[in-house]
Every structure is written in structure tokens, then in C-alpha cells.
Length: 199
Length: 375
Image (cartoon, rainbow over all chains, first blue to last red; front, side, top):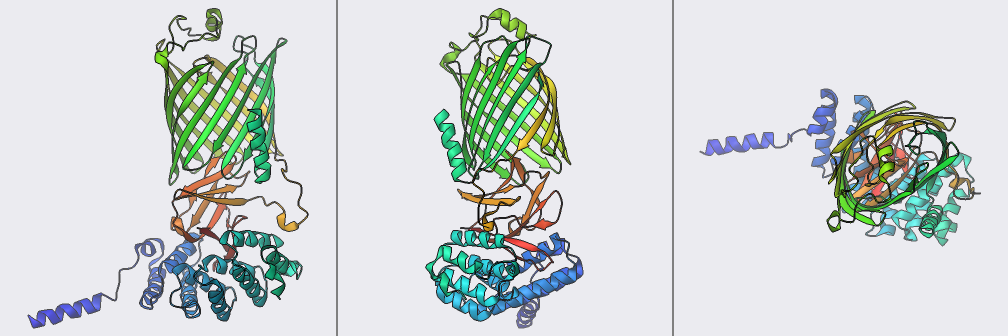
């Protein structure tokens, strides 16, 4: 009986870490890519990170026809980014905040800025603000200007809807290289009197 | 009514509605049912689209042998899981008296992947006679093909005693309707069923449908069919061809008619607001509006010349889902929990893009992805 119990425990110990591969990964990716993505997902799960954003990113890559190598690299980068974002945003960060924080970092934003955003936002979700911040970085605005703009908007407690409006307006300015140096500050000033603090 | 329409127009200007103006000129036998000759027809329409409602008005004038006929119609419809639509029309065939009707419907619309199901219930008022009833319609889009079906029934109130055809003399009806009905019996109920399909390829759209209408209390049902071809727009002009046989109308008064239509439609999209001085306010050709209503998120894309619009995102497991065309916009209803979603749209099978109106970020795969926030 004792031997049976020990055997059963050993079997459970061996089997339980090897969680079943997500069927979406198995069905949509080639076996080699699915296996590599699954390794990243399993590691993230063990680290207490959300796995759904990783799976969705893999599906996004498959949908867009990306190579398996590129998909695996992207998923690994997102997992690394979420790890850094969790350190900066704190253990209470939601899944959406971690994914958006990883996006911010991936776009060239600093983890120090993430910590400042967390303090400015309080209990408010940073998922959308960080996505808007990543949008600014994508458009070529320097990290310090983008961070300062976002900080001002968060300090002024502008709503998510106002942030969307802000994002649309900044998008229409085009690439930062072609926009007036004061353009970003003017857009911030539309929503908050703290716009002058933006460098 | 005029005030209501003006209010809608004012609302459209205030809320940055999109507008489409079209003018059509051609030949049409609809307004000259007593003749085998088509009447010369000229008219125009104005359509306004906003994320929560659409409004349209159509007017046309026909002339044959010095006699004039006319038709006009307005339609106002709110968009969402539960909506309301109102429609009114007046029609005066050449050498006949005017026929008018008003309808009001409450609609329930649900989206099931590529399929749309709509239930409508309401009333129809024609010359003081009120009927009530409802319709059930569905549409399924499969690539370039869309199949639609509708069944409905309207019942005369007050036992049908007040419903007849008082506006048409027997001789008129005999002339208008090749299958004349007994003049003395009142109409009590009208049922209809329609099955249609359209195929859109490039700038060409071919459509066809068969329809049957059954009037209880008089004679049996009558069948009809319609075929249509639209080509364009090419330089803002669309060619339309249509012919068929139309049975008794949705009201009890519009008679059986043969129909031939040939025309050119000129499309223009006027600017409703003064041209902005700020380049950040310049209009973009493809834009998105997002609206939440009772747990359903409605995503509407303005892509006027698109043949197909697909969306893929976290909420579809990145499986492309086609949007349905609804009065000049591309629309999809999806039950989304509050949160942040990544998504792209694809127009006419082209590259995945981000429509104007969504923040976008680099997507790790050499492109961009939009961020959709549901609050």
C-alpha cells in the first residue's frame, strides 16, 4: 500500500508540471512552434504571469502569417516585458496592465516611468494609458516627452475617453519628426492646464 | 415631420455624421403601371450615418406623356441591440391618386458570427387603416455572397372591417393588377416571405430575390421576383439595372407591377462641418466608432468603397470575422467584457491595418495593431 501511494505520488509529481498544451496553440501553430510557445507559456504560468496575452500574441502572429521563429521571439519578449512590468507596477497589476506595460517597455519606455505612472494613477487601470503611451513612442516622440505627457494626463485625471481623443489627435499629427516640437504639449494642454510641465 | 427631419439633420452636423448624396436619372415603369412604357424618372437621396442612428430621404419624379407621378420616402433608424425604426412613404403613380403609408417598428438585432438575426414588431398605417404585425429576418455573409431571408405577417385591427381598397376604383385596380381581386371583400391580413442573395465582386454587385405575398380575405398569394445589377462607383458614378415583377406591396394598396429600372447614380459625400484649420482634425478615409449597449459592443467602420471588411483580434481568437454592411458602414456586434483588446481590420483582403480612431502600437510582426478599450 505504501509502495502504491509513493508510486501514485511520483506519477502525479511527474505529470502535473506538464500541463496540457493549449488546444488553440496546438491547432493553429506548427508542432515545433507550438512546442516552443508552450514552453514560454508554461514558464510564465509558473512565474505567476498571465498566459492568455501570450497565447493571443501567438495566435495574432499566426493570423498575420509570421514565421514560427518570429512568433516564438515575440511571445518570449512579451513574457520578459510582463516580468519587468510587474516589478515596476507592483504585484497588484492586472493582466491588462501587465500586457500594456510590456508594450510600453517594448516601445522604448522606461520601467521607472511605469512606477511613476502607478503612483499617479492610484487604483485606476493603466491598461489604456500605457497603450496610448506606447502609441506616442511608436510615433517617434522621445521617451521623456511621451512619459511626461502621460504623467501630466494622469495627474490631471483625464478619463479614458479623453485619452482616446488625445490619442486620435496625436495620431493625426503624424510622425513626431514631422510635427512641431510644441505639438505634443499643445495636445496635452487641451486636456489639462498642466501641459506646460511637459518638456 | 419636417421639424423632426431638420432636427435629425442638425444632430448629424453636430455629431459629425457622415452623409452621402446620390442623384439618379433613368427609366422606371413603377410609377406608370397603367402603361407598358417606362416613365422618365429623376430623383435623389440623402443618407446620414452616425454611430447610433441612420436617416435617409428619397424623392423622385416621373413623367410620361405629359403626366407626372412622384414618390418620396423617409426612414429613421436607431442602431443597437434594441432599436427603433420609422418609415413613411408617399407615392403617386402617373394618372393615379396618391398612396401613402407610415410604419413604426421596434427591432431586436443579434449577431451570431457571420449571421445577423433581426426581429421586428410594430404597426403600419395606410389611409387611416392600422395594421399590426412583425417580421423576422436573417442575413448570412459567406465571402462575397450574402443570403437574406425574411418572413412577416400583418393583421388588420378592428376585425378587418375598416380595411379595404377605398382609394382605388375597380377599373383602376383591374388596369393596374393583371390578377384583379374581387372589389367588395376587405383585406384582413397580409403575409410575406422573401429570399434573396447578392454577390459582390470588385465594383460589381449582382442581386436577386424572390418574394411572395398572400392577402387573406380576398384572393390567394402572388409571387414576384427582382434582379439587379450595380456597377461602380467609377469616378463617383454607379450604373444600376433592375427588372422584375413586384406583387402587392407591404401595404394593402400598392398593386402588382412590372418593374424596370435603368439609371446612373451619382454619389457625393459632402463635408458636413467647415474644413478644420487644424491638420489634426483632417478627415481620414477609414475610421472606427465603438459603442457599448447592454453588454454588446458595436464596432462600426467607415470604409465607403470597401467590398469586404474583416476584423480580427483577441476577442475573435484572431480568426477573421466579416463585418456586415449597414447603410454605408461596416458593422459588427460582439459581446465584450470591459477590458483592453488588440485588433486589426482588413479591407478587401489587403494588409491588416488599424482604422483611424484607435490607438495603435507596433505588433512585433512588422505592422501595427489597434488597441480597443471597452469600459
